[in-house]
Amino acid sequence: MNKNIEINLNPLTDGFVDGFVKRNAVSADRHALIIATNGELRLTNQEEVNDIFERFKTCGGSIILGNADFVAMFNDNKAFDLEDGRFFVGSMLVMKIDRGKLVLLSDEEIGVVQELLDERMTTLVMEDQQFSALMLS
Image (tube, rainbow, N blue to C red; front, side, top):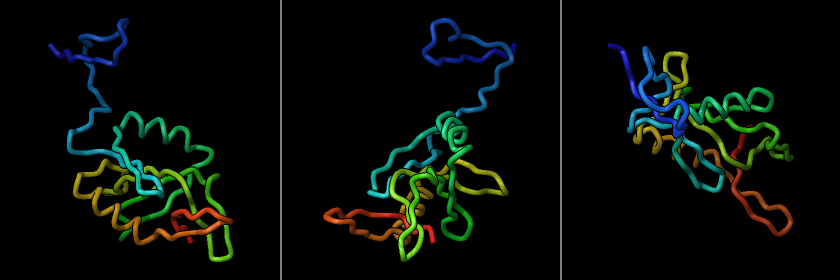
């Protein structure tokens, strides 16, 4: 008997499902990282990652972090050019590149990503506002 339980908080479909393999299952110790240029962060699962990828089809930008191990993806419409280069302010989705595929991060890798992003951050001043921005180039 190949039955699994699927719970999506949908009274019409939740329960036993024949031959179902949950593709979006997330290990408790693996996550995608959503991190903002102001340092705030949260962890998410593969289901939300898939939704973000779908929405990035027309506006997605990315930058490689470290030795090509991690990629930060962002809304390129929110990037801007200044005399010193191209910058981004906002939130990014960060995942690891493993054998040509994007995979979720371990807790240790999340710490590495935070350090790599810190190295690329700069403080910008516009009129009376001061804020952190990611240096893209």
